[in-house]
Length: 182
Image 1 (cartoon, rainbow, N blue to C red):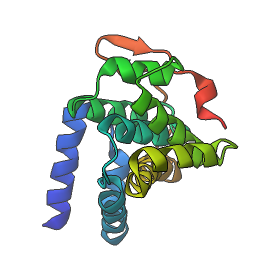
Image 2: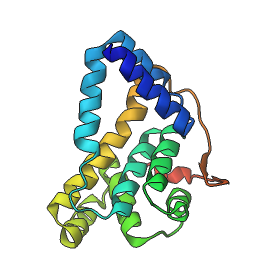
Image 3: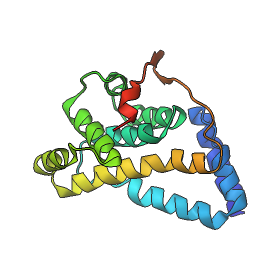
């Protein structure tokens, strides 16, 4: 019964976002215990906001997906951010390497620096902590970390074979590939 319910919810998400979550269905079928652990990690870490501004928080998640992904996970992270009120123009700017809203840019830069262990990580961490406090820093950290988990598990299960352009509104966004590296 639980498997049926989980599959139904995932099919709804697939339909809503035009996303292929075959890997999640496979994980449920192969190990319900593993899927539930994955879901708990995602829920526990990926939903804590800690007072971080919405644009910074969503941008850290988009950065986390971008570090590991070739499109589909960045797309869904972007779609969810827009659904929750983030302006698509800000997301397009972040992904193309153009200057963006200051809060979003800081969250995005921090997410990338954190996951790449970049030289500017300490400066970004200090800036975030001074601006929004330690709980916001932890929220951005957890958001970036958990956003990367979807493409990682997808790749581990052999389903990360498809690249796609990220679409914001009616426009395909040229993702600056230099953003994927340290």
